[in-house]
Amino acid sequence: MHGTKTLEEADRLMTVCNSCRYCEGLCAVFPAMEMRRSFSDGDLNYLANLCHACGACYSDCQFSPPHEYNVNVPRTFAIARAESWSAYTWPRAFAGVFARNGVAVSVIAALSVAAFIIGFAAFNDRAALFATHTGPGAFYALMPHNAMVLLLGGAFLYAMVALAMGVRAFWRDIGEPIGMVADQGSLWQAMRDAAGLRYLDGGGVGCVNEDERPSDRRKIYHHLTFYGFLLCFASTSSATLYHYLLGRAAPYPWWDLPVVLGTIGGIGLLIGPAGLLVEKYKRDPALVDQKRTGMDVAFLLMLFLASLTGMVLLVLRDTGAMGPLLALHLGVIFALFITMPYGKFVHGIYRYVALVRYARERRQAGHIGG
Ligand code: SF4
Ligand code: SF4
Figure (tube, rainbow, N blue to C red):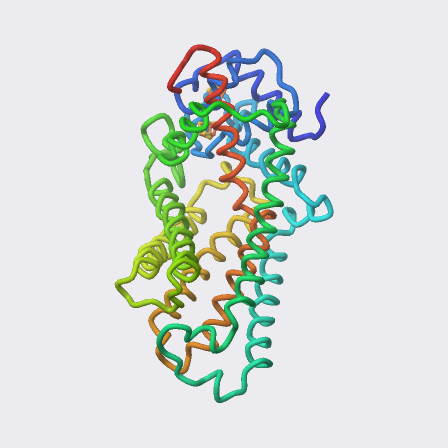
């Protein structure tokens, strides 16, 4: 007996797959499944989060619909994943945000942008808001640096705490003791698997999307998004070091490290999410959890808008449009941070944790090196 209908179905599928084993070379899910004879709720949530949604096991399966066995691992796991994220939510009161994520993110983003624009208008007179501010400290003529750090740093810190609490719940659910720190080898192996999206390649041929011809497009767009995000994070981190260690205030010249990192990352964050959105609409509906399309779209749009507003601000920062553009950009970033623990962003965190467990299991079983 399982906790939800989705987990009942996942159990049925894993029992069929465990007898068949045709897909064992496709990804990490099937070897992890083969280490078990029965599946607890935690095991199924672990396998669901280990799945990279490449779709290969659906197109390769001789028991997929219209066969009476009705085997559809990618979609069942997509639903199970989203339900598990909701179950791990901290604080619990926000668990429902996952079910209405598209609407929730749109409302929060609109309110956040409005609040920053109203705040900028309230604390600056009209002439200052539309004036041209240039040189070091130009941004802080409109919003004090400390206020920026307090609001955005506070939102980011809150997101990190909420995500850490979610990971704690996941770790406990999949049967790992709280307080157990995974060995360095498993952490490193999982990092390499995640960094290369090792299991988003359908066993080497590519990801199945709109038809049965596999391709690497989703993987490439995902890489652009992931590394674009990391570079933008590195840009903000280096700007923080410039400010506090070197006493140099933003904005920085075009050739300086924070701007170079932010520009390259920003381009990745424009192309990657746009490409993933296009691929999403081309995907075979049989493979996806259609009820949660809004959550995926909301997250990709937020990343795209964060980059777009940042890039436009970079280009127009020496003009009178800088004030309104800065308010718009900060509003989008604040909304992105505050909604991060309650939307698609969490898939990367839980998948990494699942990869750590998989690496640990492999090492314990003697398959050192994954
Ligand atoms: S998905 Fe289908 S082909 Fe693959 S292991 Fe399961 S039952 Fe077998
Ligand atoms: S969809 Fe891809 S990653 Fe997920 S179980 Fe099937 S083959 Fe593995």
